[in-house]
Length: 408
Image (cartoon, helix red, strand yellow):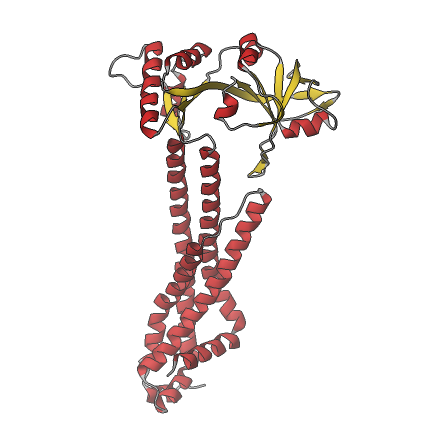
């Protein structure tokens, strides 16, 4: 039997039992759709995280009181026992790190911004030193950024994000206008470049004030995050990190041989942790998708066994007319694989559709890889072939005389 003839017979059989075929494919469709959707969303999230973290630059590292613990209670207790990082620590790093090209520090919290009866909600107020605009790639579109003089004299100048401009200042030149942040008056000196939304969350709902002014308003009991940009390549960056560690250990009186009482982290640290999380997420979903595929495969096997029973007389006639075992085997294997492949195609379209819907709702770019599509088709077709072997083998081994005696 030619392959084209077996394919034609398989299509005719599936078309003759449309509803049964569709119901049979649900498990395969769900499994493949899960794989495509998760790989697509994970690739999109990886691209986003990579672009955001790379925005700080590969030569930027941070010093903070706390590291990433992901809810580990032991880590949380350990971090809470540490002394906070103060403004004096930032100044010590700034003065003592000869391998650092830039050093900055920041604090943040949620605040309410008001102007002439209009207000914002959930606005992030950032206490910045002047270098933080460069270190965090926060560009100023109109006006100016905060300067060292602003930090030194604790001025009440403020740089605002696009959402704050739209919500409370409206049209006209915003520079020189007064806004109140948690009741404290500030004069607008600059407008930040718009960054749009990420996962549905606006990146422009913020205001930046001098770090010294921030601490005068909210107190000095919050721990700073210190940012440093190394003055050279990766080798110099490692040396700069070591230099900062020595400065911080000396200031915090860490005993020789004892662990650091602070955390030094780079973009690679965050990317590695993110990759571990995303890989674990993919593994879990793959396990769940595999269960769906196994269930779908079992359903396919069951339907194919029913089909063999229903078509016993047909198989007997074909064998009596000269069909060989491999011809019958090929016919039923193609039918099983075709059924699963159709489920794979539907699953791929459904997975891509759901992934695009989610990413459009959260305003991020979709990244559908050819590899995920090919993997989905391979898993679906492989499932059909694997679970179709036994029914096809049973059909191929039927005795033609016994098959011809079967009742219709």
